[in-house]
Length: 256
Ligand code: PAF
Image (tube, rainbow, N blue to C red; front, side):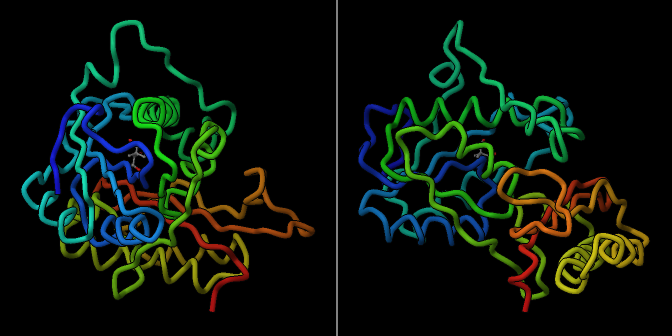
């Protein structure tokens, strides 16, 4: 695996997996999927300041560079891209807007977050010009918004990688206490067990350590609130445990 900072050293007809590092088994599953699309798998590690709403959150974001290199190499990444800030954001760069769907749910709690995400992802695409880009379904609203700015790049959706207790893998899980990590299993249990929004909220409320932000049923086609005739219903959940923000989602009729 080559580790490079300059985009000129990267193969453009590639399968691309952008990350912010703190890699785990969920990222490894994205790299493995990328390998089935192209011999050239480019992963980036760039902790994007534009998508953090506070300097504290940015500073607290886990950074594990040595482990990241090991995980990426073992999972088939051929090129690890560690861009520097000024290559991604040259003076006078244009900041994109994620539009109104960027302001609801995750966007309501994290103002400006999705503007930062779509800006950096479009910038990656313009610099690298990958053929494919792989994103996990765990960040469902992010995936939805990235599809709106992805012209020229085929977006591949990867299923959420889950821990043995069902918890969605996330770099933020490492910030939980042992007790918090155990309590976090309530999110998956509730998503799998609930048949209505009320039931979902009730099941989440059974875990005193979980502080709810939202638990809603949406139409996954346009992110409007689901109603009785909605065909593609997805439950989306966000909240905090130990002050750590956790999100997850599940397509309703796919639960088994
Ligand atoms: O999902 C992430 O890790 C980030 O939001 C992304 C897509 C790498 C953009 O910084």
